[in-house]
Amino acid sequence: MARRSSPAVCPSNKRSASVIPPPQFQIDEPPAGAILTPQRPASVVPPEKAEIEPALAQQGCSLLNFPKIADPRGNLTFVECNDHVDFQIERVFYLYDVPGGSQRGGHALKQTHQVLIAMSGSFDVVITDGYTTQRVQLNRSYYGLHIPPGVWREMDNFSSNSICMVLASKGYDEGDYYRDWDDYLKAVSGVAH
Ligand code: TYD
Image (cartoon, rainbow, N blue to C red; front, side, top):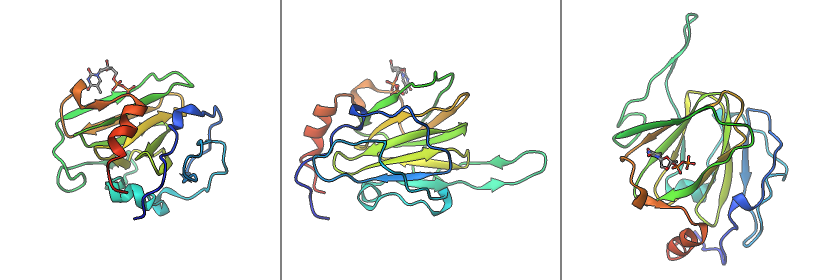
């Protein structure tokens, strides 16, 4: 894939308070050097037809569709290592009681794979490799977004009572984080795109 001349600007520089109704899957691929604007028109695509933008898929990002056992008593979804997620789960954590307007994430991990699942409600995840950026809305507990090491993520547009569960391949280690956008860009600028 041809390398772009300059990386995208961190998506946290521009924010929108408006909530895009689910289901939707918005693809943002700005021209090189453009400032991302979440206000740009969203293409509305049902999750089952959604596709991760090819450059991010090449990095290892993917949308996972977990089994769903439909039952009039209540539905059931399960996740098994090596079958539904291709890493061993060493840690589970979740975000909850998230106040409206909050932003979470704002980092990339050096070694850790994560799968984000909206266990309740909905929220958006902005993923970028520093060049290509995509906004994904998670709004079903049987969909997961796999974010591999080296991909920056930010979460916003949390609905009330939403719960973001994260399956992680490693235990918590602050040394595994890029938390500074400029440091992250320096780190990925040497990676071929
Ligand atoms: P952080 O990863 O910054 O949260 P987010 O990116 O979602 O905003 O973590 C917030 C705090 O919680 C930080 O002090 C580290 C701590 N923490 C743990 O102790 N263990 C964990 O597994 C996680 C994810 C965070």
